[in-house]
Length: 200
Image (tube, rainbow, N blue to C red; front, side):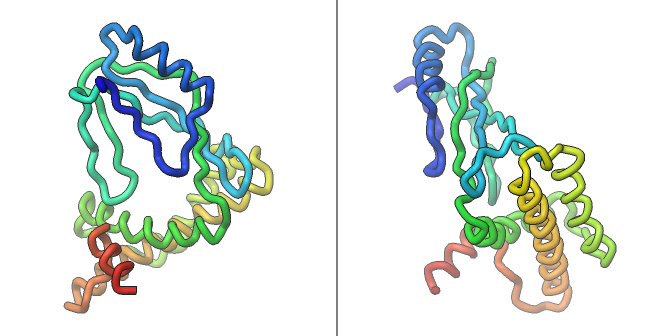
């Protein structure tokens, strides 16, 4: 085909979006790609605040016009040429349970260490950073980005986001400490984590 549509295993294209896609690619004009909005769900409820929604991503594009943005976690796509946004949504069933969130948090925070070290290879993590980053993350998600409007779900997600920040910077500290001491380095790439999964 001429067009590629990216849909993850935990996503569902709504009927309205499907109809809109068919119409869009039947007469695209000079449009090379489309941004599509994902509506995330967490713990059985759609989340519409806290910076989670709307979440627009380039997901539909001509197959000869896209490029991949490589990253250890949460990579994406870009289009060479004109894009526009569709109004329909993809339902993104992000986290079914808190267990699911924590399990993926452990993996994602390890993978994000490589990105942190790539952008700031000499970054050190102080006690203040470990204490204040979680507080800042909670404040941003729950208050500034109005996560409180999602009720108790929003409160739990803001707390979990604070925990995510604590885990991430603790792992940056761990990696830097191991590097300086000449000890075995913790895993921070998909290849390393997949090796651990295969062994276990």
